[in-house]
Length: 90
Image (tube, rainbow, N blue to C red; front, side, top):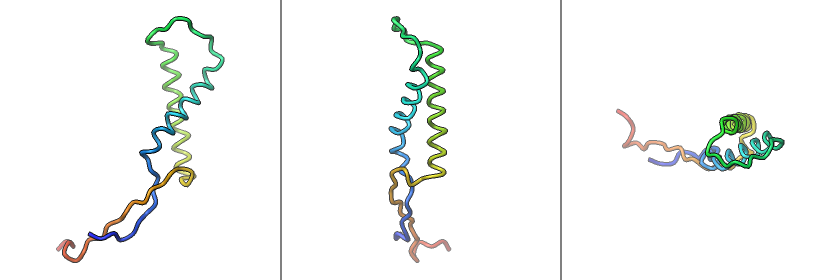
């Protein structure tokens, strides 16, 4: 096979850290005025719900940005292969 052309696509592997940072910022903003807890429990239903909601918001914003402005994110070259004469279906 030979490379017929190269297309530019978003490098989705690098969006993971972006999603973590974005959801953390959303969570920090949404919970900034919450009272401080002195008890270090392993789980809190309100906190778990806020974490889930923050991730949903960040994913929604990122998906809109990817759809509307893909050039904002790192891109990579993805080769498109063309079959040679020997590899063509018969």
